[in-house]
Image (cartoon, rainbow, N blue to C red; front, side, top):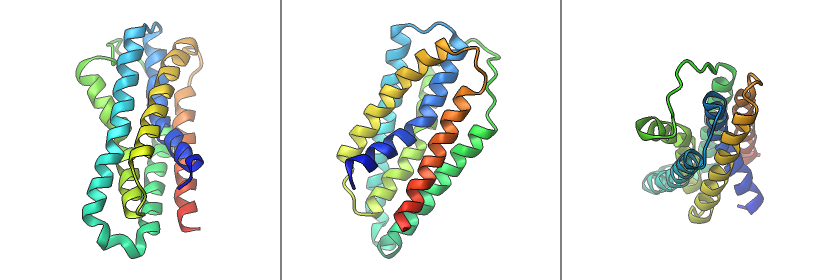
Length: 184
């Protein structure tokens, strides 16, 4: 798999983290360096570790999927992408509470939630027989970077409704396109 493909997958996977970071920045209205560091590191770490976990799970079931690996990878990426598009279209962007989601349990839950799609991508890599270490690093670094950008962009764009929704929809569309490319 080429670096361009891996980078494209990383950007697509980071779109839900970017959407959450944008929404967080919009809701917080003020974002400091500690909040940026906490959320970016947490999202990036989970986004890097989940594909590795998925890859190891894939090794355990790989022999069952070798003949249909490209189709399985396509199906998983299309499902994850479609889910991201659906969530982007049906997102609730209200800021009813002003709690800081960059700390404690909320941060952990957001980190897991935004990285579950990376688990499926790691499984896909395993089924396709692709290595995982470099892609996991790229996925984590891209997510870390886009999360930091998203927090501060959200802080600046707190008056533009729907912005985070479009990032998540775009990420979903890209994952669907990459999935379809696997079988083409």
